[in-house]
Length: 321
Image (cartoon, rainbow, N blue to C red; front, side, top):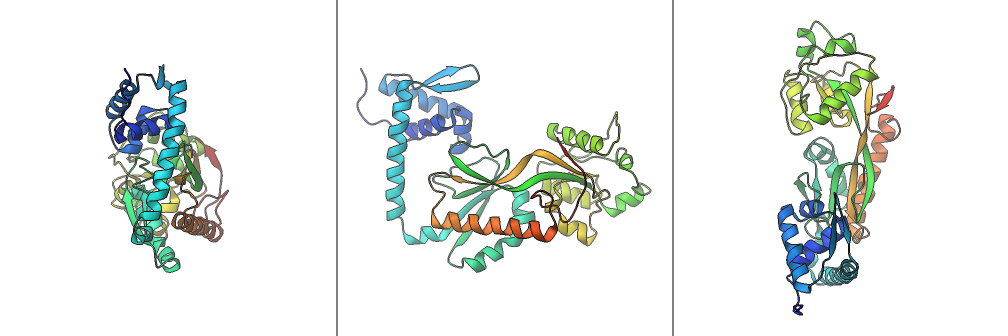
């Protein structure tokens, strides 16, 4: 017999996220739990109501008729709760903007400009979180900055910066190599992060763009974030393939050499400003969106960016990888 008591809230939250993403894995990322935990909560909910909510097909999920009906009810209930909570929440909470962002974007692009936002909105305090998972944009975070193709269900995603790549290295390493005069000169140097799958593809894409046929490349140390990879390049550990928008100060100061500024590799990814569709027009979220888009536009104009890419004045051929 179906249990007519209300199910646990955690089970409903897991269901709402899984139904929106049609993925237990993506729901788990959003809720910061394991995929197994989401699956367990869904199974408990299905046992509670006595009906299947999902069709578990090969590599994808579909909502059953019961799932579609429950999704509408749960979303409506959560929206009403959320709306009421916003009204009841202490006004001080509306003065804090929580932004979850990638660490390199935060340290090399956002933080140096954040003072402009604070001057424009002195009543808003910005709280930054550095992580990879999208996070809960209906609760824990107000805004996310993520890299990808802009496809996150239930969100509004607006492109900020295209993810372009160019090699950089320290002047000491360049001198030690006898000078870098041709792209092929880089092939014999340690390539930072070369052993990681995406970076292997990007490195080969850049050499193809440069017209260099390479059979074998030399891998160097591996790091998990671009900011550390760039710092390793500054220290002379190898050649880094980085987004030039993030390392303009190092290039201008001479800490890094950009030997081939006309060879900028384009990828299929960009950096995006992401917010919940339900909350996109909240005043503090709208204020941050308007500000950061104006910063991107201003820097694009000042830097002579190509096609909206912040590339610190670099021009030249581009390759879609």
